[in-house]
Length: 245
Image (tube, rainbow, N blue to C red; front, side, top):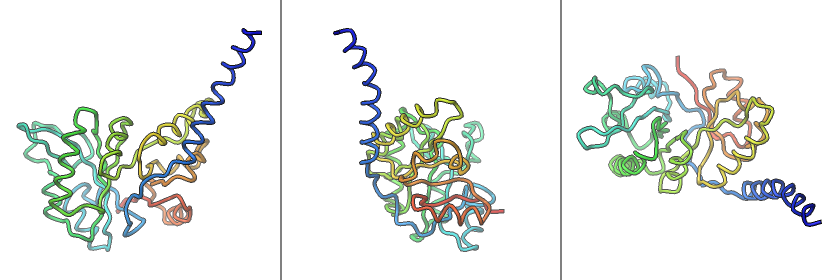
């Protein structure tokens, strides 16, 4: 009888764990992201991408909310954010755009920023956080920016600091065991203070996409106006990202 009891307990344990995770997820309250100026943001600031020129063109078209890509590097003992999609080649660093310079050239109090922190990791977390706080103070960015991370543990740690963080997530898996991925995703989100999740828009038409139907979500990159309108009708979609031609 003892062996049967042990077997039964072991069989029930995963069910109990799943129920606990579900309860924690259902009762998790994400912090507010921003008071959004608009719900359609411009991918990489416009064209040319990740540049003051592209952002100025977007401004002339009436847009005031921009996603840009940043990488943290240390140069001569000093940290800086480089604005570009791919990791910067230090051999041509003199030609790279620094975030501080971009904000100096185009920022004003009406703009909002989404910084896609491409190389956020456990090693650069603290110096990057300090630099973000410096830039926040220098350019009065509080309430006007958030940071995206795709590396879970550094992003989770950053989310517990005084900076709004969104996390890139794949809400589904092509595996037949996508239910396991779904439970894992719920646990990951419920343990952190992410203000929202980011995902490729087609992920939300795939198996498992219902997982976050009650959680704030940001979608990228949606360029068809009809699809943009459809997504923005959903209560949990905070904003969508689109390209400019």
